[in-house]
Image (tube, rainbow, N blue to C red; front, side, top):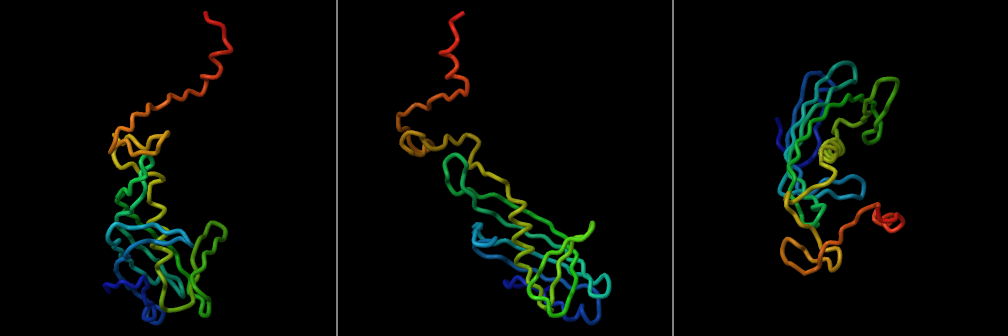
Amino acid sequence: MDYREVQSINLARLLKEGGTAGASGVVRDAFFAGEERFPLQGEAHWKVSVTSVGEGEFWLSGEVEGVALMECRRCLKPTPVPVHAYFQHMLHYRQGAEGVEFHEETEEEYYIFGEPDLDLSGFLAEAFITEMPYTALCDENCRGLCPVCGADRNLVDCGHEAEEHHPLRALKGLLPEL
């Protein structure tokens, strides 16, 4: 396998002879989905294998593993979250096609690519980001931010009491005491 920082694999040999090709590498700093940035703690490591399964058809399988930095849902502190994702996709080679395009037909999903150098960045980002949890918690006992002054209650006691919110409290005044 070829180890690289570039997130691509050259399939020229596979296009001519068939067989299997593999590559591995790292993603530094962050994954991107459009304009959105998903920061990493350290590097994310990836490896892929591409196998020719027919005339112009290939099976891509791989994995990516790293530590995402997410905001704690209570105190907003950067929180490391381990992520390990696997992915598999069917690829179709169409000479001249630009980039990598997703296609969906009756019960069949596949990607079309047109260059021997297959850009893996979209596959890696999609797998990693999809596997990330929706929210993160820095610690089960995280006390969060004070809703009155915004102080981090894990670091300082600001003296404000947390007001109890009950969805039916407003109805209490409407009912006579029993």
